[in-house]
Length: 295
Image (tube, rainbow, N blue to C red):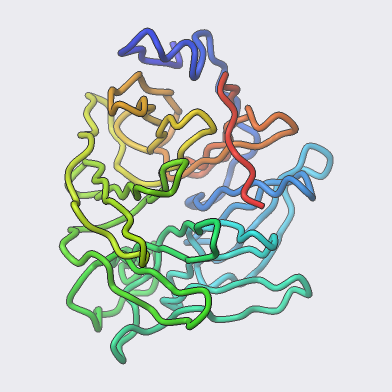
C-alpha cells in the first residue's frame, strides 16, 4: 500500500488507492522541485550532479543549467523569475527573463552564508530562506568550514535588499512555507524532526515561535522540503515519505515513496499532480486537493 492513513480526512485531501510512478531516474540526489505553469514544466535540482533540469510531458527530462553551483531549493517570484538556493556558492540567486543571474544574498554581517537551502516568497516580494550547513558538507556541497556561528532563517527586503536574521536557534533549518494568509511561517528542523511555526509581524519579523508538529514514523526519512496546498494542508518530507498535516496540526497520513523524499511540488493543468524528488529519481502521484500557482 502506498499510503499510511492516520486520520480519515486523508482520503479527502490526498486520496486512498494511490499510484506512485517513477518519471525518471539515474540522478544523484534530486531536490528543489518547482512547477512553471506558463511553460508547463517542472524544474528540479541535482545537487551532487551540479545540474538543474526540467521535466515536461512532451519533452521528458532536459538540462536547464549546468553547472548550477550545486543548486538546491527553488521557487518563483510574482514576476515569474526563478529564485534558487546555491549550496556551492552559498548564495541566493534570481534567473532573469533573459537567462542572466542576479545575486540576491551571499553574506550576512560580512561573512558568507552557510548554504541557503530552501526559499519562499511573500505576495509583497519579501524572500525568506533557510541557511543550514548541509552545503558545506561533502557530496551535498563543497567541504569547508562555516564562517557564521548560526544556522538561521533570513528575510531579504524586496526594496532595500537588506538581509535580516530572523531566527538563530535551529539545529539545521530546512523546509519552510507560509500559511495561506501569510500570517504564519512554518519551518522544519531536520535534526530535531519537528515543524515550528512563527507569527509574522507587520515588519516581516518573526515571533512567538513554538513547535507545531512532530514528525514520527517507523520508516526512514528526514524533515526536508515543505509546502502548503490550496486548502491549507501542510505537506512535509519526513519518515516514510511525504507526511500530510491538516491545518489543526493533525497528521492525516503519509504518502510512501520508494526512496527518501527531499522535496516536492504540485503541477499539471489542475495542480493535482504531486511531483516528488526522492533519492536518485523523480516521482509523480495524484492528490485530491490541488496546490497553488506561484505567479
